[in-house]
Image 1: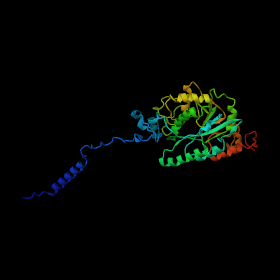
Image 2: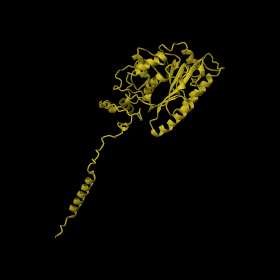
Image 3: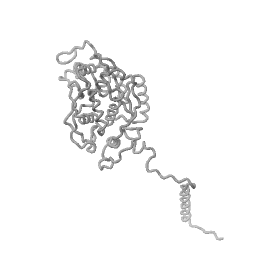
Image 4: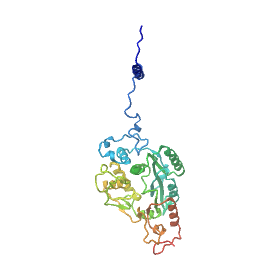
Length: 371
C-alpha cells in the first residue's frame, strides 16, 4: 500500500486536533459519576458575599437588594459593608465577666468602649478613675466593651490578650464582630441586651470611651441626688445638626442611609450618664429601630422614639477644656476639679491628672491655676 504523505502544516493541524480531543475526553466522568458543575460562587456562605466588616465569623447573608441602587457602588467600602450587613445583630459573646460582677447592688456601672489593641489605656483606667471601689458608700463596677480585630493574624494575638485580661481582671465583655467606628452602634445594642439579663439592677451607667478622663467621685456625688427609676440622660448636648455628606469624612452619611437633613438632639458619644429607667427605654427602642452607623446619633434616635430627650451638663466636656489665658495651661488640674468628664486624654495624661486631683493638698488660686 502506498503511504500517504502529508504536508507539514497539515500534520501540525491534525496533531493539535488530537490533543484537543484528548483534553475533552479527560473531562468525561465514569458512568454514575456526573461531572460537578462549575460553582458560580463559593460553597461557604461565610465567604460570599465578601466577609462583612462587622462579622468575621457570623453566617449572616448580605442584604443584596441594597446593591441594586445605582449610587451604591459609588459609596466608600466601609459604608457599603455597613449597608449590606446592618440587619445582622446576633453575635455571640466571646468573653463575659463573672456573675459576681453584678452580684451585689451596683450604683454606677462603668461601661467603657475599647478596642482590643488599647491595652495601655485599659491598664491606666484600671489604676485611676475606673478602679472598682466604693465612693460615698456607693459601689462602682467596671466593664470594657470590646469587639474583635478584623486582621485574622492580629486577632489571634489580641484574643489571647483579651483572654489574659479577662482572667486577671474579670472586666472584659467581648463579642465576635469586627471592632470599627461604624460598628460602635452594634456594640451599644449588644451591651443593652447583655445588661438586661446580667446587670439590670445597676442604678446608673456611665457610657464612655477609653480615652476620656472621668471624675467618678464627682459623678457619684451628682447621681446620688437623682432617682434611678426616672429618666436621666446627660452629657455634652448636640442639636440642630445633620448628616455630613462629604464622602471623605469619618462621619459621612449618604442619603441612602438617612434622607433627612436633621438629627434628633443627642449627647456626644465620648461619655454620658444615664439612669436604669433610661437604659430600659433605649433597649426597647433599639430592638425596633434600624441600626444607624453613628452610635451617639442612634441613641438620640432611640430617645426620640421613646418620647424622651437628652440634657446638657456643664461638667461634661467632650470637646476638651480650654484655658481662658495663654499664661495658664489647659492641663491645670484646677480646671478639672469640679468637672465630670473630659475628652480626650493620652494614657500618661490620665495618670498625671488622676494623681493631681487625688492629692488632698491641691489648692487653686482665683484664676483657677494650681499653686
